[in-house]
Image (cartoon, rainbow, N blue to C red; front, side, top):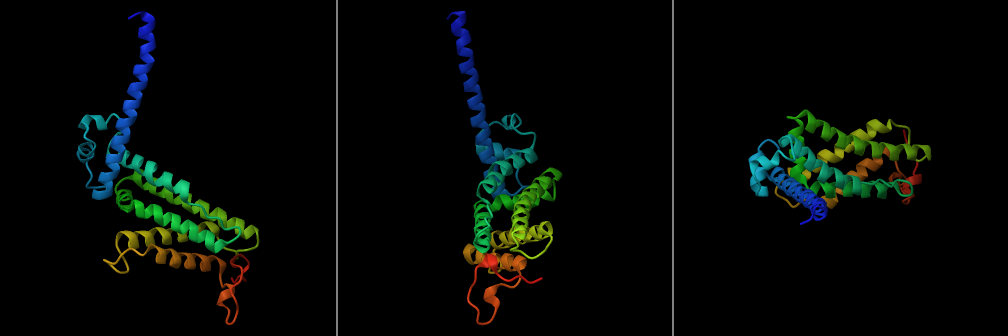
Length: 233
């Protein structure tokens, strides 16, 4: 082999190493997600992750500093990415339908990864980094909701309220309703998870909490345009 051939082969070998490293990282990340999903945060060990990934124990530390780091990367690559892609709140033309769409999307992401959400809550009580990750996830949802409410206020469609505090309270309602219903099975333990009923209840509570009395509440009145309903303080 000539010197030129050797030099040409080096980039190819480098690319192969990078591809192999990326594949190993994805393998470990998928294994970590599966173990956290089933065992929770505290009971998960590095050994359980490497066993699931069929890799050497030391290989784990080439990609993650510790269990906490692996968990945060799992949450960022699974939950955060899916929420960023799916949660929208189009309130402009039909506020009630926009709320319903956003709530349904959130519950769908939650239900796909309810074990990870449980692990996230568990980890937030043990790790400052995990806690900040959880709070950051909530802040993003609160900000989106608050921005949507502010736009409705500017358009004269929503009564005066503290949009940030209301968005925070409604986000907490959504998150904890998802946890108690989809993870704990309340209010009817053992019964099938009725996500659509939960969507309807939360949509109704969200909508009435920020728009006040609505046209269809008046005796004898027909259903009006939700975005143009009379507002009460």
